[in-house]
Image (cartoon, rainbow, N blue to C red; front, side, top):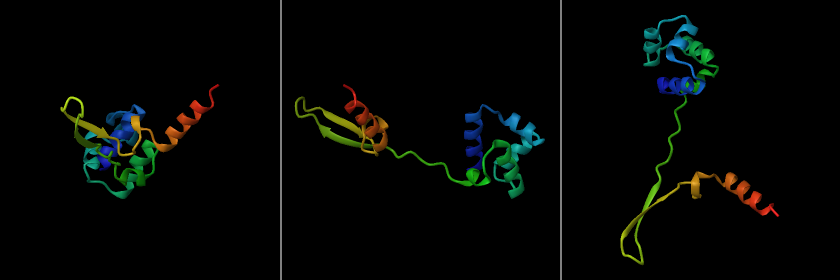
Length: 111
């Protein structure tokens, strides 16, 4: 879990594991050892500090995206089977209700 969170943060900030190891004054192998679960709280705090995040952020699980539900039906016209992916939020294009409301409000305000 820690390894995946660190990789996400590194990717987002454009930093490599070598850069992080240099910043911590340790070898890349030692960093690898820490990230694979052999870490103390003090080392966790050092890594988090070097990344600019709290240690707690490294310990929280990565949120999983819900799988879209598939609706299977038959086309009433051609009688071929259809599969329709339903977005779990209930909105098209992955918009949240707030995003959809803003879009709808923008459309209503145009002359």
